[in-house]
Image 1 (cartoon, helix red, strand yellow):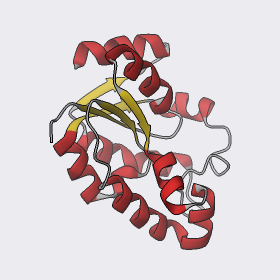
Image 2 (cartoon, one colour):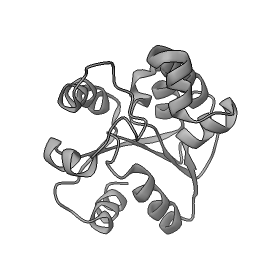
Image 3 (cartoon, helix red, strand yellow):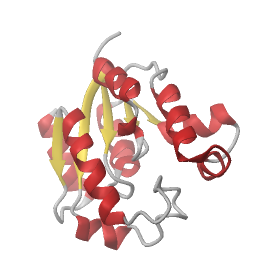
Image 4 (cartoon, one colour):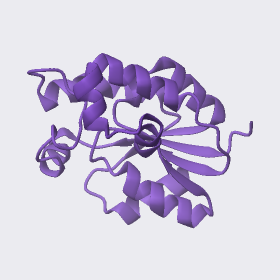
Length: 165
């Protein structure tokens, strides 16, 4: 398996899908949204999986499906919680470059008005700040490349990413 994929990780609303589609077009790659792959394989929406199987069950399903994605010349947009799956992340590091789209807590709060409705994997009573603090070290651990979005436009983020690849 060639390492010619680009795997995007980061918080929900960090622009993984948007950046992924643009990047795939520029590179002439395919684009895969891992969340959609999960929904197709499970025949149910992410919110329903979380509802029926709980967060731990969802993370288990997500880990299994992510670790089975076999593609080449593809930009993969992962769910924000993909970094909880060690097997999935090890697999992604084997098949491509893992890129962390880093957003500040301020930007995230502006973009993510209703986390629950977006199907963000949060434990009961967990705040967005505590989720952010829990995930950032995982994103940093697995990233081959970190793109700090700051207050850049999506086009500027894509340009930075292309330069880093």
